[in-house]
Amino acid sequence: MVLNKVTSLIENRSPLELTQKPLPVPGNRELLIKVSVCGVCHTELDEIEGRTMPSILPIIPGHQIIGRVERRGNGSQRFNDGERVGIAWIHSACGTCKFCRNGMENLCDDFKATGRDADGGYAEYTVVHEDFAYLIPERFSDAQAAPLLCAGAIGYRSLRLTGMHDGENIGLTGFGASAHLVLKMVKHLYPQTGVYVFSRTEQERIFAKELGAAWSGDTEEEAPAKLHAIIDTTPAWKPVVNAMRNLEKSGRLVINAIRKEEWDKDMLRELDYPRDLWMEKEVKSVANITRKDVDDFLKLAANIPIIPDVQEYSLEDANTALLELKERKIRGAKVLRIA
Ligand SMILES: [Zn+2]
Ligand SMILES: [Zn+2]
Image (cartoon, rainbow, N blue to C red; front, side, top):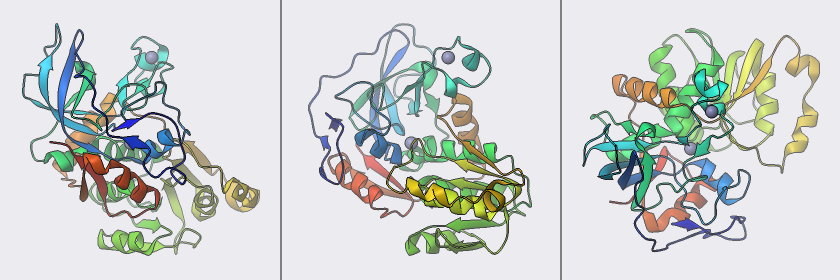
């Protein structure tokens, strides 16, 4: 399923086209992967609508890939033929800059993203450098493992960046694929912590309560307790303003969104300095992901275990899955079943 040009999903409800392409050839230390499932991520909407521009067009999107090694390029040694591997958002980084050398390859100037700067997993086959592929713990099925690679791993990075401790309240604003996995992580890592969920859809609020949230309410509501940290996974600005209001003194808002949409940016005028920012409140974004985040999170997820709730679609129905994501018809994580 190929994106030929950046477009608006409101005007064009089928932005991806089913296309026959030649089988990619793995270069030195690369792997040809036969894709089994690929997760559907909100970032695909940002790519299609041009908020984060694909650096090549046409491009095959998709960066939560589970598949098996079909063929290995020269010098590939890390994996065996037929072995199950995953591919995540980080497709490559330079490896030599000061960020790469200091454990921050997610901030590399040459960061290349799977499905945006290199063909991804909305396809039967894809190619990746073996250093950017992961072994998948056995306890996960292919469909369960796919959403762990982005929604889960970036959720894990977001949670780390909150700097929170057990017993401190955390808020989640937006309750899609990533947030529902973060809730499961928090329950395990911080058993004394209360989780407060803000969502504009009732379905998500009910789902949050089912998964053990202490409270769930609408995006503009005030939580019954002040929150030490809030993770925002929404594309909008109103949740940011409301989150700042709900933060405890010195609390931190972590924005886990590659881009925000522009339509409600005026909401930022409602920020009230004494109420929303004074008292050392902080705002931080989460950018990309490192291989260590993915590896650490896969191990954690297998231990807990975190088994994502998934909804499967066929590859041909990728446009439907994306539209439902846009319209927030969400329960758990969406994945494309390819083989
Ligand atoms: Zn993603
Ligand atoms: Zn670098």
